[in-house]
Length: 332
Image (cartoon, rainbow, N blue to C red; front, side):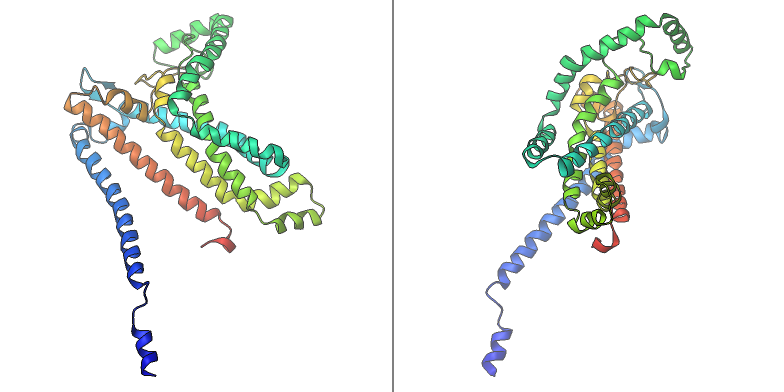
């Protein structure tokens, strides 16, 4: 009896290894938290001169002029939101259609190559997308702009007058100032292609994870293929699909190089779908290396801090949405 009690009290051979493993995991977790907090601290510290100079007006001011030492982030904030959400609106239906085709319609010999090609889009470097947009898409858009420009001379003259007076109209928003090819539309197109695989891959996987019993139950009730997809599969997979959408949005908000190569990088408010504008990420990439003056450098870092918080808010919102949409039976 005594030997039995001693055996239970004696530490197991693996207890020391468990302690080391637990300490290692906790240490790695603390490193991640430390990196997050240090990032906020460093960005916040270097943002102090700009925030002290401009205050909250930094978010609403429309002037970004290093010569006059005036810096306002409003045009870049608007440019970031327009490009990201417009690309998301276009890419989500395409990605969802691709996922449904691969998971529900395509034969096995076709589904695997299509899935691989979609996922391959996420592995292409940003600079390659930018070069492809400049050499392949820009001439096409430029020709289309030229056709609009030459076929509507009266509207071109009217829009030019309105823009000279600082005004605009709905028709003028779709009329280019000059057929150069670069601008907001090209940035939206390239972003759409870049974020499409994130939503498509996640949606495909969660659709495949829907239990077969749900499909069979709907078919047993006489449902058609589309009714099974719309009433049994998509409602069950909506949390995962939403997660993929938010993941794609996060990628779009932070995309830098490809957007900087095609968007025109104007620090003024965009006045047409074809006009030049800028995003927070593109301005940081293009101007940070040349920013020698303290206030300009601090203003650029403040853009980085703002983009950092936007990314955090997007990811936290995604978590809340996923929890809200996840069926109660499978919530952890």
